[in-house]
Length: 234
Image (cartoon, rainbow, N blue to C red; front, side):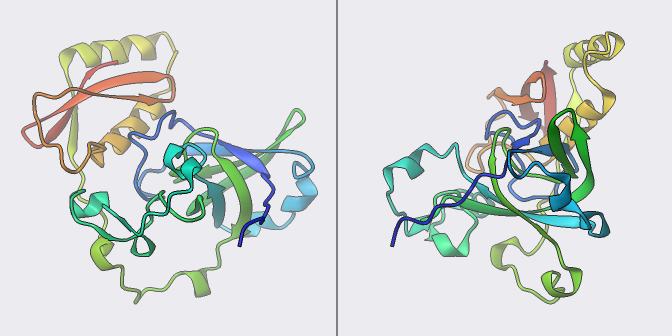
């Protein structure tokens, strides 16, 4: 059946400016972002009592998935966690290539603020692209949502992190941006956390290859050398 319509209640404003580099699961990196609510949902009364909850569920839309526009169902996909080569059923993954382009993430609630005419919901731990449409916000219920004996198949444990180092050139650029107060120190800390998760495609292991990603107001160039992620240029 088709025809189900859902409202967009807000849009995520995050430092993730492109899909490449976004953590593959929420809460792996405590990057701060906020949801900019749209009318008529930008009413503080709708958030009364939310401060009693530490975490929230976000229901959102994979809006930047071009393949989804062709309505082509893929019964199997290649999860990055399995090296990007092994196929398994789409319903055994969190792949973006789904019958319905909906995602579900748990984030930590920081604050709800009125900023001018806007209502903003500040969170950390989001894995959402900047501009992602938000469909719904629900409180996270610890006693029912946290199942400590749950089995998570091929993703039972958090992925190993890489050491992140700065080249001399990148370090000089970083210090210049800090001195000019163009970039906050926490942005560089968040960048290092994101890169420590090794955003490269799982099937690529080429030390000669240079990668680029946009994070906040930074255009970052990095490569992989001797088991480390090396930031080469900003």
